[in-house]
Amino acid sequence: MMHMLSDTVIIPILFVLGSAFGSFLNVVIYRVPLKMSIVRPSSHCFSCKTPVKIQDNIPILGYFLLDGKCRHCSEPFPSRYAFVELITALFTICIYLIFGMGHTFIMYLALTYLLIAITFVDIDHFIIPNGFVLIGLGMLILGIYTGWIPIEWEDAMSGSFVFAGFLFAIGLIGQFILGKESIGFGDVKLGLVLGGYLGTEYSILALYLSFAISAIIIFVMMGGNLIKKDSKIPFGPYLAAGTLIALFTTTPYGGNYILNWYYTTMF
Image (cartoon, rainbow, N blue to C red; front, side):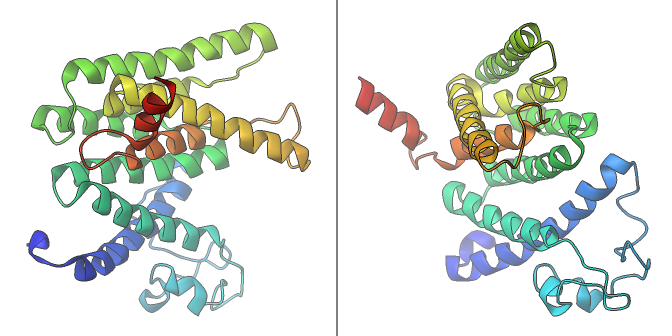
């Protein structure tokens, strides 16, 4: 049905649906690390415990209608709620524009939503829940088995080995040199999932992007005295960023714009 509609109709629908999923992701991000139910209780103010009315719970718009605070006690709501809803909606549209509407769209969309949740949980708690990793592995196995993820088993296994193996090796080296954990085991487990989705070549690209982005951001934050040399830094967000950039730079013909530029320039 969706493929019969024009983009001018599909894109607004995807924006609305994506923002709604973003609202759900906010619940997941807050409650899962605290081992709370993601179903009950319904959305409510954390200060006065008053349930948020349906008309006030509209993704993105609801935050601004409430002026960013509880209608009853005026306790401020985190602006990040609206931000998560917005980026989830925009990512949903991006994936559609790159991969079209089909099974691959569903699998990459699910991975993106999972990475959004992982990013903010890792930022808040410095953990990547095992449940998230297991969900990712389940999606990966289903996607390869059904052919919904365009990758062969051999390349997926090789990608997992490269991605997770590299992170594990860096973690060991960091432990030896610095005497403390530099790459968490949660990152290594996540690498198994991401490498399986990406395959070997894209895994190398995603790793390069992840470390490059992290180096730039950490350098800027240290220069601005936002963090110290011994500050604990979540690496999950950078792995998510590197992976999504690698996916989102896929060409319509199955290649990758960044890799194509690299091969053309270097060889």
